[in-house]
Image (tube, rainbow, N blue to C red; front, side, top):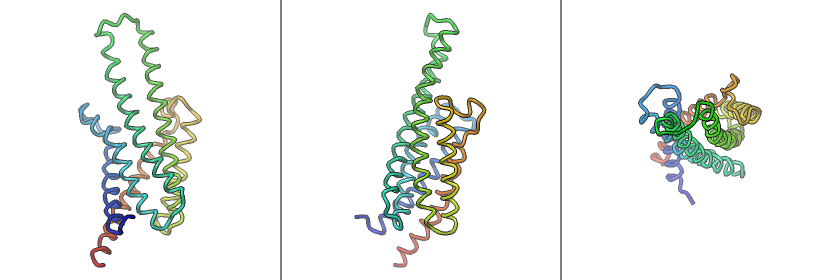
Length: 215
């Protein structure tokens, strides 16, 4: 059984990791960087998010013992692993395809396009698997937050809305990513939501640490 001190350490570790993961997501997606820096940012996102959600679980489970929280945590960890696999496969495809003609591949442009589309469908499918898992985690964590008061209740309501929108759009346009057909990509909205949650969790972890010190 976790002690109060151990629980608070997990909450603090989760908040720091989750914040770092969110920053890595936006850095990899929107900031021009050398390839190596992009790889580090992109590949660290999933594991950091999984650790962050573990801290969030420890915080929420103090007042909510329902199975939904365990399901949310398992979904988040599975999602973190899935997005890591998806991104490594994706970047491997992107890195290798431009080199194909230089390696003496006897194929015309049309054939190369078909190969590229076939390979892209692999990481697109993984991307949808990631979306299903992280949306499940988002919705179930949010369900627990709604049972709290103040800012947590607001975050819970927004999380359910964003989670359902992201899941619905990705399933509706499957297997093509919504952004590829000029539809709204709700992924950044969910990412911002998680970032705010981890910021709030960071402040909460500080207050909990003070309580332990005083006690």
